[in-house]
Image (cartoon, rainbow, N blue to C red; front, side, top):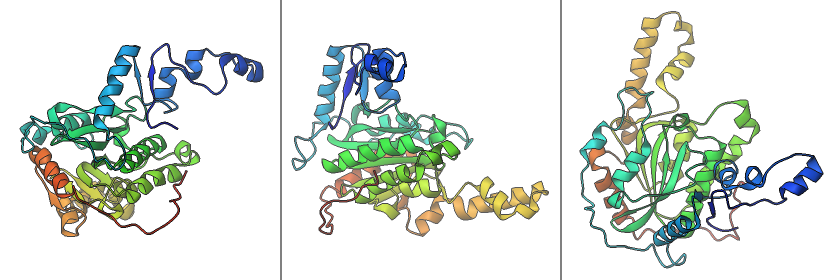
Amino acid sequence: MTDFIFMVRDTSYMFVTGPDVVKTVTNETVTAEELGGAKVHTSKSSVADGAYENDVEMLLQTRRLIDFLPANNSAGVPEWPSFDDPLRIDESLDTLIPDNPNKPYDIKELILKTVDEADFFEIQAAYAKNIVTGFGRIEGRTVGFVANQPMVLAGVLDADASRKAARFVRFCDAFEIPIVTFVDVPGFLPGTAQEYGGLIKHGAKLLFAYSQATVPLVTLITRKAFGGAYDVMASKHVGGDVNYAWPTAQIAVMGAKGAVEIIFRADMGDPDKIAAQTKNYEQRFLSPFVAAERGYIDEVIMPHSTRRRIARALAMLRSKTVEQPAKKHDNLPL
């Protein structure tokens, strides 16, 4: 029921029934560490948000987290003196995206180069690593970050990632913390395991969380943004306030290769024709400038100016207010 849970490795345990009861009832032999240790709850169950080596480190990290958080939901985010210029330009971001669209890169590098003084506090770092969530500061004010991680599963959204991000977005919204979303998502993870596990419902949790959020929402598409996953990741269609894209962004229902193989199935025997149609699809549908023409993207920006543009957008949205219809409470797709 708490907002955040931290554990100490090898000494913290949580379980509903202990190893002895499990042995008696199910005849399963398991240690306390295997049943409910820090590793289990940070990487498998997602009950805990972080694990640390000892009590002192855990207390220090807890203090660090509390520095990012407001005193209550109406106090406003804390503002710390910052010596990092909000107009700072970082030329290295221009080469962050590899030339090969299938080659991964670390989205945390973008986060660290965008936040004040490279200070980023990650939440649930060991769970659903294909999405990154955590707190940073822009111009001294706390901001929540949600970002697809191309280094893990190419950054796809699966049930675990959707749940992790949805809870983080709900927390930020509850305490009036603005949310910045970095998007590089090729879609939802296909497969029977995901469908049987209720991916549709879990994906809807993230969609619902973003669409209900009344805090400032700033989104940046770095590379891929395909299909329903593009929609879910704080797009204009679910209430994004300011949506940027880098020139390397590709925004479409699906990738060029997959789309052409479906649309021009009759021409599959002619590789030259398929190559020409793929190139044509990329130019007509994948370009971020096409999305900008239609109003889905506010502006295509250069990577080196990312920090400056996000800082400006957050400053503009500082006084954002949203009127919502009266209701008892919303019905989150639990």
